[in-house]
Image (tube, rainbow, N blue to C red; front, top):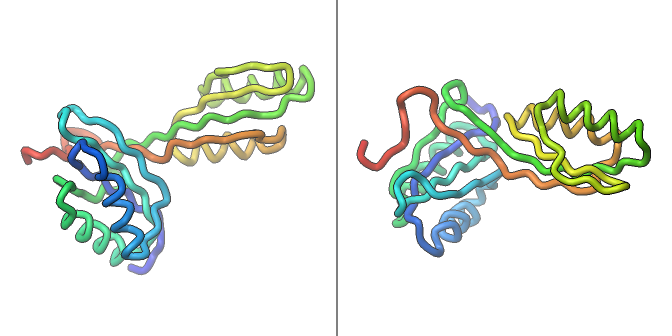
Length: 170
């Protein structure tokens, strides 16, 4: 019961200024740490979807969901079950490329991971890789041997598998 693993929460929120601030502020007040948060529009123009990952036990997660649902701008909040979701993350990675062999090796790795080279310079390559956080981590571990110059990760985004969904009309 006390295992501290990454939990995923999805919330439908009003698409208006200040909502992200009020959610982040609630986390701060309760001393909960957000591991990652993604926010974007949904199929309903007046709503945005937040996907939030937190590290904590069941009790922490229950508190987060309960506190979020009390916020005025949160329309619906739900915990996503790890075995029943599709997750993706995007990373942009700039790697130091000292020579042609390194360039060739890095490009081969990018192909194996089904990524794309999005920028080339004489001394660096910038790649885009999409997948599960584990896939991104594995790619980054390989790239560390070449020297990661810059890294940007989006954080997790997720949807439930199959027909179940988080919608207001449920």
